[in-house]
Amino acid sequence: MQIFKFGGASVKDGEGVKNLEKVLQKFGDDRTLVVVSAMGKMTNKLEELVDLVVEGAVYDPVIEEICAYHRGVIGDILQEIPSTYVKWEESLKGWCSKVKGEDLLWSYDQIVPHGELMSTSIIAAYLQRSSRCTWLDAREVIRTDQYFTEANIDWVVTEKRITKELSQMDQVIVTQGFIGSDAEGNSTTLGREGSDFSGSIFAYCLEAESFTVWKDVKGILNADPRVMEDTEKYDFLSYREITEMTYYGAQVIHPKTLKPLAQKNIPLKVRSFEELNTEGTLISSQNTKKTVPCFVFKDNQLLVTAEVKDHNFMNEQKLGMILQVLDLLNVKINLMQNSALTFSFCIDNKEFKARKIKELLNRDFILSFESPLKLATIKNYQPDSFNFLPWNRSVLMEQKTSLNYQVLYR
Ligand code: ASP
Ligand code: MG
Image 1 (cartoon, rainbow, N blue to C red):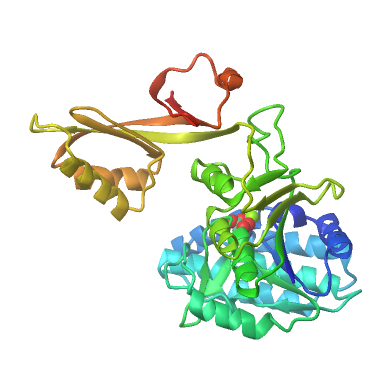
Image 2 (tube, rainbow, N blue to C red):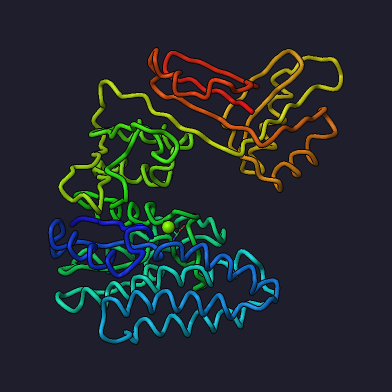
C-alpha cells in the first residue's frame, strides 16, 4: 500500500490530469491511494467566493468562473461532463444560497471543500476510462473537531474508519486532501496546504509502505528557487531535519505532515511530477551526516518590544506573562531576545493578533511595534553562507548558535 499526493499545481489543467495517470501507471499499483488538492488556484477563488457570500455581495460571477474552469479541464480530457462532477456544482450553488449571514469560519468550511470534491470527481472519472478506480469522500473517514478552518484530527475515530474502509482495498482510490468532517456531519478543513497532512494521516492509519508527494520541484531544495539562484536538492533528509526546516518557515511540506510518518517510520518521498526520472528527496529516520546549508527567508514579520514599566527587571515572572498571552493567541515566536528591561520577539505580521497583544499586555508593559520586516534563517551555515544575505540591510536583531544563524532586518 502506498499513498500519492498531488497538489493543485500538478493538476491545474487537462495535461496535469493526464500526467497524473502516467505517474500512477509508472509508479503506482493496485493498492495506491491518491490524495488530491483543488485544481490550480481554485482554493483562493473559493475563499474569494466565501467572502462575497458572507458579506451578502453578488457572487454569481465567481461561481461561474469556478465552474467554467473545471468544465474547461473536463473538455480537454473527457467526452462528457461526469454526473459525479455536476453534483458538486449544484452542491456549491446550494451552500452559497444557504450560508448568508452565518458564521464565517463555518461557512468557509462548507464551501471551500468543493475545490477538492470537484477536482477528485473529474480525476476519478478520467482514470475510470481505463482502469478500476474508486472515488472516496474523505469526509466520511477523516473525523475532526469543530475548530473550523484549522480542524484537529480525532485520531481514534479516523483510524477506525480508514482501516475499516480501506485496509482491504484492491484498486486505486482517489480521495481529497485538506478536508474532513466533524461528529455532526459539518465539513471541516485542516488549514491551507493541508493536503500533505491528509496524505500522512492515510499513510499512518494504513501503515503504508511509503508516502510520495509529487511536486513541481525536483525534491526538497535548500532554498526557495524563486528567491535564490543555484539551489541544491537534498537526496536524503531525516524527519528531524525537515521538521526543523518547516519550523523556520521553509514551505516545503505542511508542518503537521511529519509526525505521523515519523511515528510509524514511513518514508516520505518528495518527487517531481515533471521529471519522472529524477529521484527526488527521501525523508526517513536515518540521520544524514552532513547537510548543505538551508536558507529560509520570511517576509512580513512584526517585531514587538515589551519594556517593563516599573523599573524592575524583565524577570522570569514577566516573561511568563508575555509567553502566556502569546500561547493564548496561538502566536508562534520566530525569534526572541531579552535584555535587562525589555523582551523583544518577532512573529508573523497579522494585524488582528497585534491588536490583541496590545490589548492584553498594554497594562503591564510599554509596547512598540515595527513591521514589515524580513527574517532570514540559515540552518547548518558554513563560512561562505553569509554572502547570500542582502548586504545593505539594516539589522534589528541577530542570533547565532553553532548550527543556525538568524537575522531580522528592514
Ligand atoms: N487546496 C488547499 C489549499 O490550496 C489544500 C492544499 O492544497 O493542500 O490550501
Ligand atoms: Mg493547494
